[in-house]
Image (cartoon, rainbow, N blue to C red; front, side, top):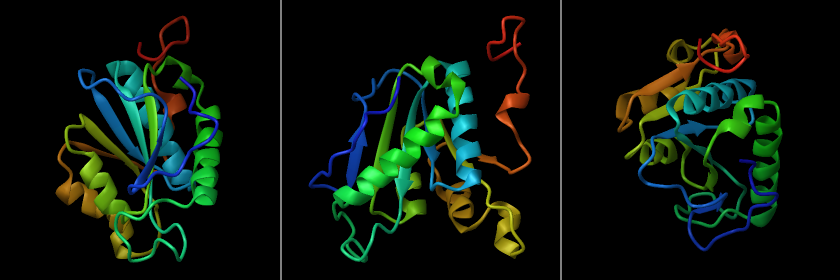
Length: 179
């Protein structure tokens, strides 16, 4: 399922696109921020969701400009919602398996990224985050957000490192995921 062409601001802290997800199917949550690491995490999450028959919930959280700073629960400004929606659609367009995902939703939140991901992990089967490899000690564990998610998530956490490619996953003779 493709993501909706635009996101609309809500009165709450998040903006969501795509139909409401069914509660009875497995759920994979993935954090995205537009970085190459988060694109790899999104591709891995989509691949895993296809294998599990799971729905995918994409979370983009963080600072959406001065009107939302230090205001938990503030609405995501329309221009940021459109920007984030475009970013997610562009990333999803690069993942051929996305058409095999039965249910896909996207949430843009003004919450701090780690807090939004940890909260979204409640009731999820898996939380997927990308590793921003770098020279700092915290990056050995994937960065501050990743470290917080590993410590506090309500479900298993998968950290997708920069050297992991979903395209390297086994395929059956017809080219479908899983061998």
